[in-house]
Image (cartoon, rainbow over all chains, first blue to last red; front, side):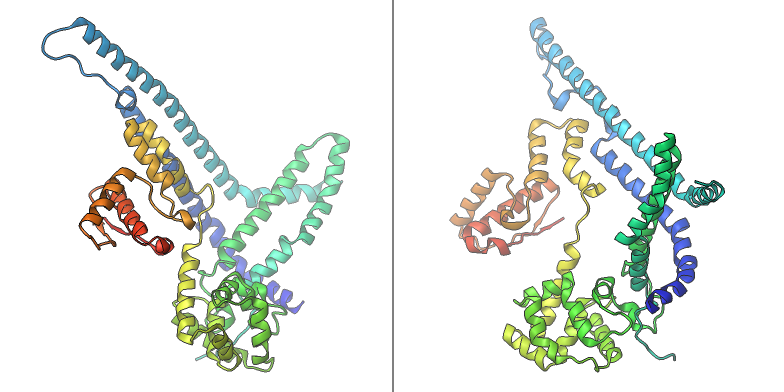
Length: 138
Length: 323
């Protein structure tokens, strides 16, 4: 019981000295850092820059060399068909991956924004909520 | 110079415990449920759930914030102490949580608390004993009348000796072992000297540091487990390169009995054969590598060679690479 009283005596100091600086400065920094870490991780897993740079590159570097030393329409058409097919498949896979990557980044950013706004506005919302509850009767 | 004292109440760890009991205990959760019940009842009557859902969300977010604050600022032992003259501030949360009747701390209570934490139990297991055996053997060596302040001073010195910033179970147990008497007899029973205990405690500190794992969806873990998808799909690796990256990330298992590298088995076999033919004894290979692929290949080769040469020692093997 005495211990609980000691803690009550300690609470104002903890609230002013630890809680407020943590709530308004340290934790927001931590939230931003965490967001950056996740954004970087998602970028590492699905790199939007590389996807754009290699959007129409052949799929898994599968390509055929064009015939050298004399023109052979049959062989040329065969290589051309394979190369185009490889590039189309690469494009399809990468465009889907690009969409997934973008969706992941957008969802992460929206989540981060919602969380940090809620974090900053929570004390105000709490006070407003308590005021509303005390003003209305059950 | 102000005198030293030992008081657990005005400490972060004790504040953490008190706040947890106040806001996050099962009793307080029951109080929240009872407080919210009239609002939910009214909502079921009127059919309007928006207000009550809002109030509930507000309450639980508040509890989440309190819990986060306790974890980050009060339980966290790296935070600065409230008073440097109060040795109680240096005791870790894990020990304080285990103490009974924190207003009147005695050495038997400290012994019980230190031997009951996760680290304390681990240390005792390393000595080949369980907590019950340890307490039965050593409880008679401490008395309620022993000076706690003096003992905590010794424990602080032990913590410094072990390279720790706070007084955790390891430092407290070390201070007890240094007292001699029944503790020395206990160590003799375990067939270890005080120097051995020091080594065990240092090793335990290292084990404690490396055994802290990242949580399942930590960004680093996500990159480690899903990175190959990114490399394969984004950069358009060939099938062979994909296979290597999959092998490296998926099969390099350094835990338990499956410790080892399983890539390039053919090359490893050739290397082992060459090693045998030339009676090569250089099993501890450090390879300066230009790329990680080459490093992993040499890594796997040296490990496999050691394992094949002395199969019984596989669990103690380590290969290192220099980049």
